[in-house]
Length: 428
Image (tube, rainbow, N blue to C red; front, side, top):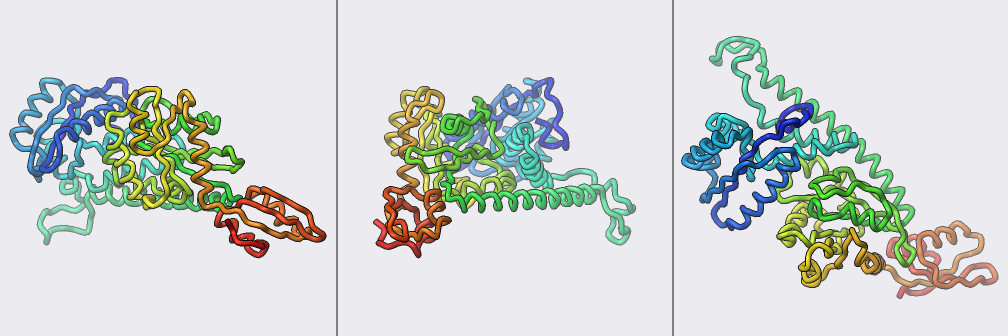
């Protein structure tokens, strides 16, 4: 997983040997730590390395200098030598000082969960926007961890204050280079966000419903998008296959056009650097009419995964967007149906198609919850209004008069505002 600390990904011809470290702090449950370590093992495997050992410790609080206690660090050193481990991965975030101290004591690389996730994203990013977002997240992670050579590579001699010249250390040069690159990437992503906002405004004028798919990584969001829209989005049984948002259009049973966007999967302890870098991408979630939250019904702790997704939604200011829970993979687990019933969710199998019809009906009902039946009178001379009504509403009745058309239509709140001057009766 060295790519998290280099500018260019290197080919993993030999899989690294990894030891995982989890710490249960005061007030936490050991079972939760074990679940996190199991997930971390999956992340490490996805990143292209092998877990050869696991160390678990209970502590009141992390040690400020090494996170672990001295005795556990000594035990970790012995295990690392015995297993010929290349890297030690901590489930919790390490401070730059803790990371440096651990590497000195262990004699090998020490990283945290954040570095592993960043590495996976770096491997999977394919679009220019995705690559820029991941690189920005990596630089934000690396900036406080620049280490090393400042004192020895000063351009001017003298370690005493009075002897320092106007030169700068190599560390300062590296820092300025990273900051410049970060500013460049941020400008690129702002331009992409502006383009996306223009596209979104164009779609809004067409009055098409916008729905976002969210969920824990590998919950089956991409498979569901394929099942609903006939899209050919990559859907594999691996973590973080989808990084770039994909939007597809399809029609609901009532005829309404819907735009559904598949987003990046979430995970416990999703790095803040990634959430910040992907905020422009995740704006599609915040601005949606409805969020379809896909839950893996075969997961060991689906409710824990739901909480993790909700935490990220809160971080991107999308907690207030209406949600529709969907429990996927009912073909894989006998407990999935009971889970769906307990949560009040729609049970489906994106792989077999079971439950898709029910999901479409529920989607239609939820999106039409704000719709009302209104009566309108539109002059024949306003053909533009008639055409737009047919695009943006559902026409139930239409009758031609002497100089106008009387219509009964189903319109949402926004459309009722647009056609207010032609409405002749109170909405119902």
